[in-house]
Length: 109
Ligand SMILES: [Zn+2]
Image (cartoon, rainbow, N blue to C red):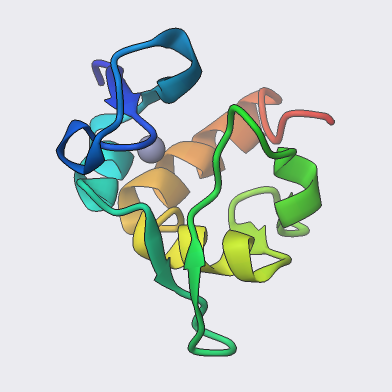
C-alpha cells in the first residue's frame, strides 16, 4: 500500500505544507481523517481534537490490545482518533494479525 504524506491541520483549514504539519499515513487512515481536526469521544460524546503525532505522545493516548491487533484509545483524544480514523478496521486488523505472527508487531515504546 502506498504511503501518503498527510497534512495534520488540513490545507482547507489553513494548515501549511511545512514539516511540522506533515505526517506519513496509509491511504485508509488519511481517507477517514480527510479534513477532520476534531471528532467525538465515543465514551463522553465530547468533541475533542484528534491526536497530533508531532506534538503528542502515542503511548499517552493509546495502547495495543493484549493480542497486539487493536489500538485502544486511553484518553478522549485517543478514543476520538481511533473512531474517526477507523484504526481498527478489518483491513488493518488482518494486516496486524499477520505482523504479530511474523513477530514484527506490536512496536515497543
Ligand atoms: Zn492507516
